[in-house]
Length: 127
Image 1 (tube, rainbow, N blue to C red):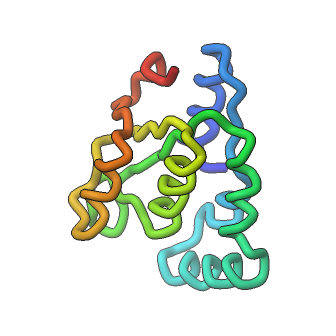
Image 2: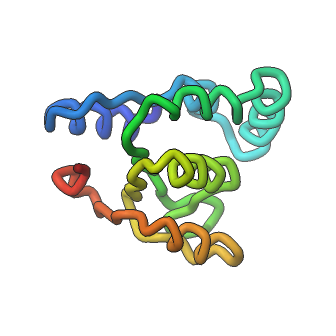
């Protein structure tokens, strides 16, 4: 689990939420972008990670997206996370973003359409 993810889980639990971070992120810690992309391909095909995440999400009330700077993009959200935001929306779950919606062509409008709550590090906004 990334340090920020672990901190978020702890902060949410302190506020009375039942919070967890998937185990899908752990194998990516410490990898450079090329190794991360290779690992992502293996996860998508071998572990069927998209369906695994869907199964994990079905029991939740909300999703907190930890969108930090990556690939030179402020508040980056990748393709898988965009799909997870869509899953949350279809499941009528609240969507929270740690940071504002990134300025990524073709993503920005779709993310904004689910009306996420931007918490800017203020975990008290997660309700």
